[in-house]
Amino acid sequence: MKKFFEEFKTFISRGNVMDMAIGVIIGGAFGAITSSLVADVVTPLLAALFQSPNTDALNITLRAASEGQEPIVLGLGTFLGAIINFLVIALVLFSVIKAMNKAKELAEKALNKKKEEEAAAAAEEPKGPTTEELLTEILAELKKKA
Image (cartoon, rainbow, N blue to C red; front, side):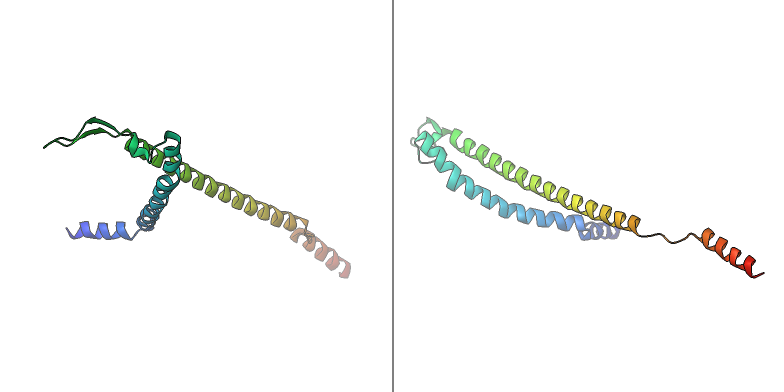
């Protein structure tokens, strides 16, 4: 049992778990934003298109409520709202990931360009004589003196 808790402690303290937790929290906040976008922007537009106050008005009542029985409702409008919510979330996530990939690509290009410029500058620097050339010159000087 002690080994189990040690493994759990190692697992929970890894960076990936913390990143995932942060992602879940941000995802929850993001869900609230997209829900508001769907409920406050997209749904009223659809309601205007279908001339109903919201997509719930598109639900179909199969059996009306009566004494002791609840109504049976085919929730097409509710389902349509869920589909719209999903599509908006997917579109926004796609856009965010695409923007992040583009930013990463631009950063990599800038880094590669900087490395190329540094390499070109290093190549342009005048190179001094090699060790063999220096030794040859020293040997020639020593032969002159001898």
